View 1 (cartoon, helix red, strand yellow):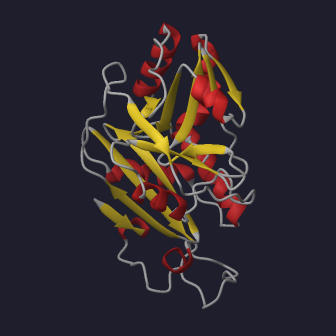
View 2 (cartoon, rainbow, N blue to C red):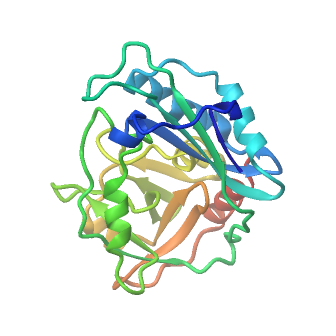
View 3 (cartoon, one colour):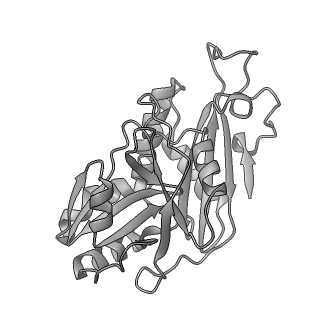
Length: 268
């Protein structure tokens, strides 16, 4: 199901700034039995993005209702897209933008169980991640870094790590990257590049409850190679285990990490 501007009949036009300039934001929300999972984290990121881009404030609970209404039974990913709407030619935004809202639901899906899923095979992308502190962390529409990185996956890769122009390990193609060191997790910062993922935020907030410590830091290549295992997090995967192609096998996952991943998989 897809809805534009609450289904009132108005359509997205050719002069919409989201289409012309990527002037907008989006959220990909896991909806389970018509319930938007981890909505508090989606809401926080969305409100940050609206503020950063200078959009008019939106009613988050109304948006949540639209997302849940678009979903059918079971589990689905629902995408909410907000653009600055129509505007004159050029980069200058309209003084009083009329925000375009798009909601589209994907097909019913079955997410892999964290205990039985095959680890992702993770390589390195040749595409650099863009660095811009004004956009770091927010889920804006300009995702060509990720599009190109996905296009350049090599045969046998399920994911690829992006580095910025300075060589800093930044993220995975489709989510946030984590290193496991015993019961300690390390993830790169997102204030200059990458997305402040909702699952990333959940893990950083909840991990201590499971006996897992966390650290936000740029991991070196040597630290990546020495890690006990890797994870990639996003709305579809939760916190999915991975192994570095050409590296050693992942070491046995501690029970604390298994419990953390299970809780995230089931989180509402």
